[in-house]
Amino acid sequence: MPESHTVELGEDGALVLPETVRHQLSLQPGDLFILTLSADGTLHLTSLRSQLRSLRGIFKDIAVNTPLSDELIRDRRQEAQQENQA
Image (cartoon, rainbow, N blue to C red; front, side, top):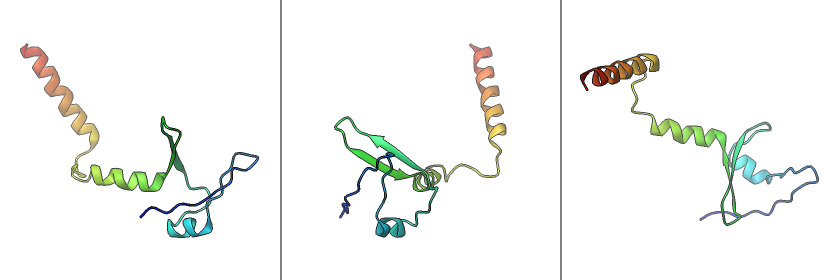
């Protein structure tokens, strides 16, 4: 079940996250966040660290031993070959 916390917007625009939340999420001063504003006016705050962690899961099946430059070159060669055949 989601937790709700009341936070106050400071004069300088800063929001202070409750200590329990910072501890629960292992947040440190200087951590970066992604703030998403929905059309209905709701805000969603995501830790950049957690977002990167989830992206790693998406790309986990990519071969780590193949440099991306090699994959790019291979793809461009295949595209060029297809253009020459057309």
